[in-house]
Image (cartoon, rainbow, N blue to C red; front, side, top):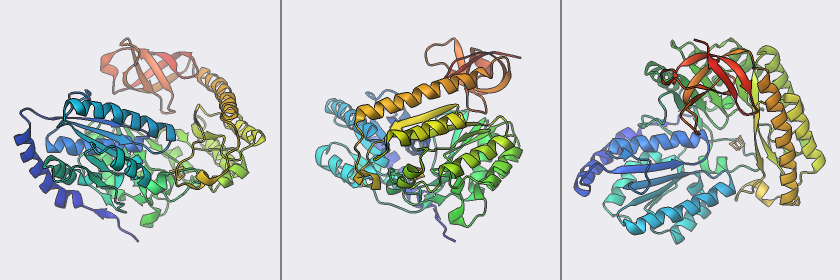
Length: 469
Ligand code: SF4
C-alpha cells in the first residue's frame, strides 16, 4: 500500500511564513492585500482557498479590488483552450496595472502553467510575472514568496510534480454555508480528450480519517453543505487498498451528528457501483443528485474517448439508481463534435438525453488540448456544423428541464438558501437536495438555513416558491 501523506508545509514552510511576516513589516506601511481569481472547476476553487489561507497566514488581507492589491494571483484552469486564452488576455490587463505600480507582485498558478508549453510562453513573453507555480507545490508558496519579496529571483517558477498530499495547509473558505472538501487529487483515467492526468498527476486519495475529521469540524463550526471533490470520487481509496472506499466514506460521514447535506463531484460511470447506490439510498444526509458525465451516447465515440464504459452499462446504472432512489435527479457533461463523430453518432447522444431525462446538462464543443491523444485525431466536422448540433442538444434539454421542473409546482421542498439573487436584493436563492435552484422572497435570517418552501412556479432553470414557515 502506498502512503502519500507528508507534512512538509508544517515542517518547512512555517519557517518561511515567519520570515515573510518580518519582510512584510519592513516593506508595507499598512496591512498588504491580496487579490485571487480562480478559474474552472470546484477543485480549482478549493485549491484557491488554500492559496488564500496561506496568504492570510502570512499577513495579507483579501480584497476584491485588483487595482489596490499588493499581490495578484490568477489560479488558472487548463481544461479548455478558450479559457486559457482568456487568462492570457487577463494577464495583459494585470501587467498594465503593474506598469503603474512596479512593486505589485503577480502570480500565475494552477493547471494551465503545469503545461510545459505554457510555462515556456510565460517565461519568454511575460518576464514581469513574479511567481509561476503548479498545483503540486501550493504548500511551498511561503518559500516562493519569500524569494520574490527578497528579490532573490526575478521570476520564481516551480511546476515540479509531487505525487503526495500535503495536509494541514490553512484554508480561507469562500463561503460560511458550503464547504469544499477534496477527497482525492489527480486522475488515472486518461480520457483521450482530457489534460487533467497530465497536469494533476496520478490519483492520490486523502486519508479516510483525515477527511472524516475535516467534515466533523466543518459541521461543528456551522457548515450546512459539504461538497466532496475528486476527478473521480468513485475510485476514492483504491490507491489506499480500501474496498468500497467512497461508499464507506459517505456512510461514515452520514453518521456525523448535525444538520447538514453532503454532495459529491465528479463521478465516473465506469466506477459508479450498485453498492454505492445502495449505501446512498440509506443515507439521509447525502443528496440524491447524481452528476454522471456521459460525454457521448455512441459506443464507438466512447471507445475513442477511452471512457471504459458503453451505453448499455451507463443506462444500467441510471436505471438501477432510479429504481432504488425514486426521486433521484441526474446531470451530465456532453462533448459535441468529438473528432470523427458523425451526425448519426451525435443523434445517439440525443437519444440518451431523452431516455435519462437530466435536470440539466453541461455541454461543450470539443476543444483540442495540447499533449492529449485526441489532439492528433483528425477533426473534419466544420465548426458551424458542431454549433448546429449543440443547439439541437440545448433545445432538447431546455424542453426536458422545463418538463421536469414543472413537476415540482404545488409541492413542498426543503431548500438550503445560499444568498441573494445576482440581479437584485429582493430574492434569495438556494438549492434543493436534488440540486434544483429555488428562489424565494428575501428573509435575511433564512440564509444558510434549511427551509420548507412551497413551489409556485417553474421555468427551465429555476423554481419559484414561498416559505412555508
Ligand atoms: S476521468 Fe477522464 S475526463 Fe475526468 S479528469 Fe480523468 S481523464 Fe479527465
